[in-house]
Amino acid sequence: GQQLNQSPQSMFIQEGEDVSMNCTSSSIFNTWLWYKQDPGEGPVLLIALYKAGELTSNGRLTAQFGITRKDSFLNISASIPSDVGIYFCAGPDHGGATNKLIFGTGTLLAVQP
Amino acid sequence: GAVVSQHPSWVICKSGTSVKIECRSLDFQATTMFWYRQFPKQSLMLMATSNEGSKATYEQGVEKDKFLINHASLTLSTLTVTSAHPEDSSFYICSAKRGEGETQYFGPGTRLLVL
Image 1 (cartoon, rainbow over the protein chains, first blue to last red):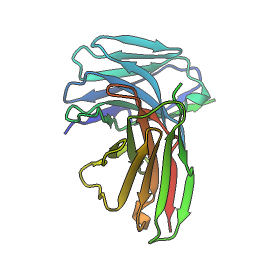
Image 2: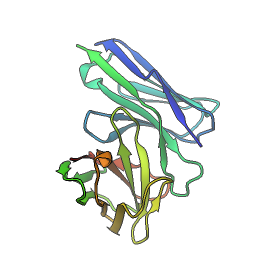
Image 3: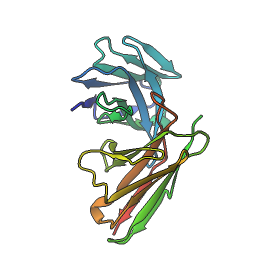
Image 4: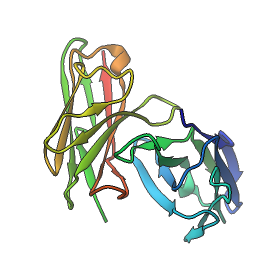
């Protein structure tokens, strides 16, 4: 079945540093979503990408939809302590009629103040 | 924005008892709600998809008689874990969306601990 692999699995950085993480798939996706999950909370949508090559920003976050439609990356600039959490990419399951989502393996981000 | 709530936020129960978790869309009508389970240090795994007024569609490997889902209205879905066992301890998260192709909005999750 479809799988989304994220790298790195975890990152430990200093406040102020820029961060980059990516998500790859063996199959094509038509939509890429990036979520952040704080400890003990549900995921919150950060950025949605709908078109190959699309580059979208949301404050200090920038995400791109890969040209091949098999990958996406998320960058966070000038990280701050509240950026701590798990970042998931997600995409719709092609086989599902109700657009159920497949989630990536996650990237855990820790920020040292 | 679209707000989804869950109740309770956490629950501890004895093995063999049943636990009901509610998921509500507070400011929109949700044609579809989804139930996920997340074990520690793992990603979200979809358990079932629930459409208002119809039976839920369960993912492979999820027992429909153990995880009862009721989507009685456009703003409420419930997940009942029947005869819960310690291995059912997990973080249960619901999501809701307005319609086909719409974004899913997630609830804050319910942490279940079965002793």
